[in-house]
View (cartoon, helix red, strand yellow):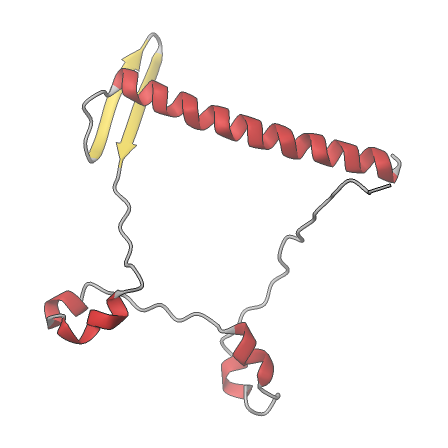
Length: 124
């Protein structure tokens, strides 16, 4: 397969994926509204023909960035609700030389990431 053909197939697959993801989301919401119109948080079961349908309803919770301004005013019980997960600052990590990061390197797991690709139509 030639390079141009591969690029075209990639662009086609990417467009199909976006289309079907959007369609799946719309159909999911329509189906949920039809089967579980008054659902709140929890797990619900329904039947349609020979299909058992399970709907799991959740709420997303996250902290906004202004929490840092109020952190000292929180009670200990409120502070216990917040989990701090270590994450690597790659910018600072790259600034360290080998001897400075010797202990940290024992805990850093490096795996290959899926490459990103951007394809734009050439001008001209």
